[in-house]
Figure 1 (cartoon, one colour):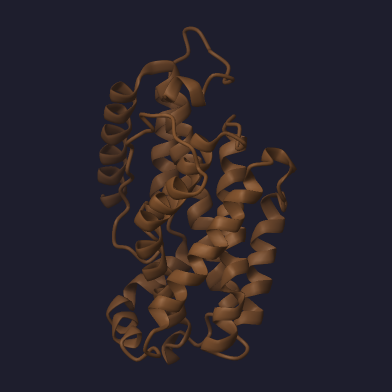
Figure 2 (tube, rainbow, N blue to C red):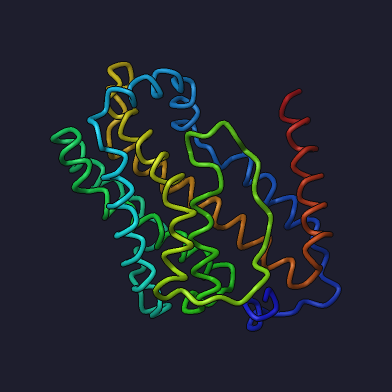
Length: 258
């Protein structure tokens, strides 16, 4: 239950959530950085390029992603003892793996994919900790995995799924595999788009390092937003927070469009 996940969060009496909700809405609008906006403009070319990727590549990406996330979630059972690369260290590591992966085309990109997936998930977990959550709890780790379904960096969608955990779960064996079965296909598509984007000539100046950094930053921002909203629901209830967030997001979109 939400109350169980947030049991150790501080309760702030007479706390007005609107300023923080407004800040989270603004953060949502900024989640797609300049690099992602450039790549989105080439969405059609990326889709066409995906058709030329080697046969069976999607299956490989899904298999690699499943294995990497399974290992990363297992490591996260140790909570704050899991690797913490820091706010600057994580993008730096993502950039390094992206640069290495870009050296030899698809072959090296696939080889570095497990590291990239692991670094992204642990950046999400560190964002959860920053919002006051205990990442050793299976509910929190499950919610971290769900961040990967929240509109990938190449998706034309700046909305956010503000549904929250409603039941206590375990993340071992069949339960983990069932959750990953829902998450991996969509996330694998996003990773496939990343590989395709790296192979478009017009985007030749965009290195694997820059792409990896942009992807990690995007998902880390979504994690801060999701866990920030989840923390606020513990204090004010899910429906009021959801409604206020959606209203604020619409209002800021209108101002931005002027």
